[in-house]
Length: 317
Image 1 (tube, one colour):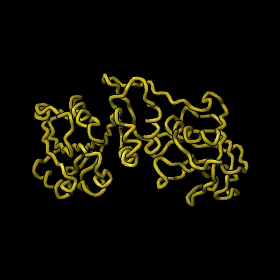
Image 2 (cartoon, rainbow, N blue to C red; image 1 turned 60 degrees about the vertical axis):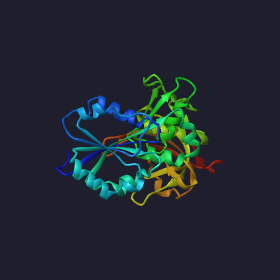
Image 3 (tube, rainbow, N blue to C red; image 1 turned 45 degrees about the vertical axis):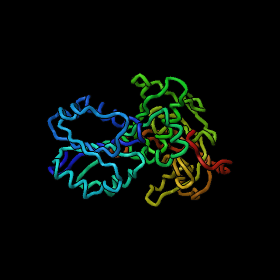
Image 4 (spheres, helix red, strand yellow; image 1 turned 90 degrees about the horizontal axis):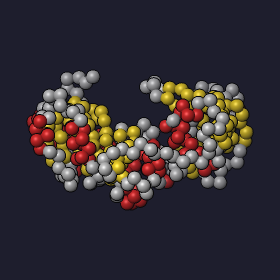
C-alpha cells in the first residue's frame, strides 16, 4: 500500500518504434486505469503510433510531452505533480536516454516505480543488439516484462533472445508477440545435455545454458546430480560448510564480466582453497529466498581438483 504522498510510476521503455505507445494503449484497454483515479502520462518521444485521445479522456489521463532529455528533471517532475495532481504516473521513456539516471536521480523520492515494461521490435532487434547492446542490456536490467513484438513465426531465434534477457535479469518475464498479435508460447531452448537423466555431466561450454535454465526452472533439476567445474569462492559471511564453484560470465562486454554460480554445502568446505579449480558432484535441492522465490543449491557428494577450462569466460549462447 502507498502512503498518501506516494505516487506509483509505470515505466514503458524501448527504442523508437519499438511499440511503447501500443503497449500503453493495450494496458489502458485492459481496464487497468479505469478505476476513476487520475493518471499523468509523460511522453519522452512521439512514435509512429499515437494513443487514442478519447481513450485518454475516458480514463482521466492527462498527457505531457517532454522531447529534450535535459528538460526532464526532478524539479520538472515536481512541477507536473503540482499542476496535474495525479494518483499515478506513466512514463513512456526514450530508449536512448539514461534509464538508470531516471530511476536513481530524476524521479522524486516519493515516486515509486512499481512496474517496468520494455518493448523490443523484432524487426530491428538484431541491428540494435549488434550495435547498441549495452543500451539494450540497460533496458533489460530494469524490466519486469520484456515484450518482443512483430516477431516472425519462423526465422527468429527466440530462445537466444530470451537468454539475452535472462542473462542480466533472471526475474524478468519475456514474451514474444507474433505479427498477427498472438503470443508465441512455444519457445523451447535446445539444451546441450539430456535434462531427463538423473546424473548430468556438464561440459565446460555448457555451463552458461545450464545456469540460465536452472535459474529459470529450478524444480526441473530437483534431486538430480550435477557434475561441473568451477572456481572455489568462500564469502566472509558464508556458513563454514558453504562455498560456490563459480564461473565468470560475460553478458555484454569485458567490463561487465562477473562470477556466477550456485551455493553448495560441503562438510569439508573449510579445506578447499579459495580460487582453486575443482570439479564438483552435487545433488540439487530447491531453496527459497525471503521473498519466497525458488532457487537451486547443491549438497556436494564429491569434490576433485581440476584444471581451469580452456575458455574461462561463460557465454549464454
